[in-house]
Image 1 (cartoon, one colour):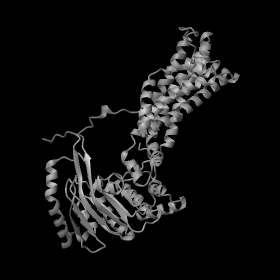
Image 2 (cartoon, chains in turn green, cyan):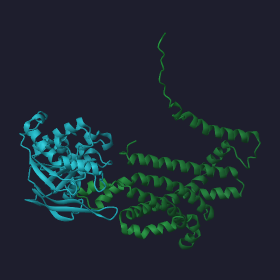
Image 3 (cartoon, helix red, strand yellow):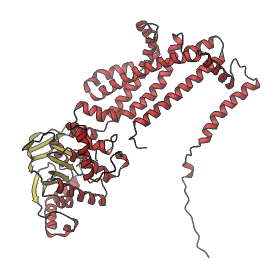
Length: 265
Length: 265
């Protein structure tokens, strides 16, 4: 009689999570194709749901006529200013609150009290203070970006490894040397997380502000097209917003990889 | 320069508000070009002592001073940390140059000195690697090169090889001895390993457990250059036995007490 063998098999196979790269692409394309097919059958009026190809054609026309570019540039300008001002202020406040205990004592309660306010609620006040022009819209975007930046930077600063701070001090670094050479680099991953969060919030607030008080911009374009029942134009605006969101995320992720080359993974 | 630890003592306040004496009255000196090992059971305050000498912790009473001619641009002490404490965002070269930047060495000289100590520690060819790309042994070489580069009056090593595997540790000890033979940089080497202390040092200062006090100073009369073959030498065994005799009861008491709340090393 032969000896029976029991071969050990990998029992964790069901725990594996393959990447399914093609499925990712096919799923997105499939949705668009399904959408196109639905509109072709005529089941849904194009007034309510314009076809993807129609949106693409309209977008192309609007781009060629310069109409889209005007709105896009206005929106981008507000985004850029608001994002830059909010991010820089947030990083500055986050670092000082994280490092200096006095700044912590002064600023922490103020941030805790103002952070929960939906920033768009401040737009009327900002318009009163800064006028109906660009400044009020930039300010509301900046406010929206400021809070996640300040809070994330603060967390990043607090997480700085005390051992590395001690090492820097042992080699002669003073207060600002420690901030520049240890605290800022160790806070960078959190700063980038804040930037990505802020980018989403900035887009949201920008569109809201442009729908409340503007005569140009993607938000304005969407609102106006809706009022005129030009659903295809409206959809062009939405697609542009989606692209803006995706591109800003990609851009920040690329910048992060370039700046934080020293990270493990 | 000569380093004098003058009747130094240190007390902490623990979590329950009780005062814990970490260091009793510690009194000793490290002469220029000398290799001194500071040995004691865990929880004897040897790392605390080293931190006080490095200026990273205030003493409760007594003081540490340096005697002799001060050379321009040379710090009093430089530290090699048990956990390496390399800056992950700096390359090997960047880490080695850190202390030189803080001392104010100009770019060109900084480059030259970094190269010199990178060569000495066997890091040539690894200059542009980041710490996470290196093995533990290579990381600690960076730690040693960083501390050597500032040419301090005394080099402080806090259990520098205890995070390494046994083979790497043996190699690193020999390399450190070779470097010391070449540079005659005075060294204060903290360890809890008797063989390590006897193998390398001119003198071994034995500390008692908490409150840490100097139990005795054991001169090591082994010829240099030292090598592994000396581990069977009567002088080696005699010195090891004498030190073990001093700390055995201390170590047993520490083992039973199991309270290492105040300090790790």
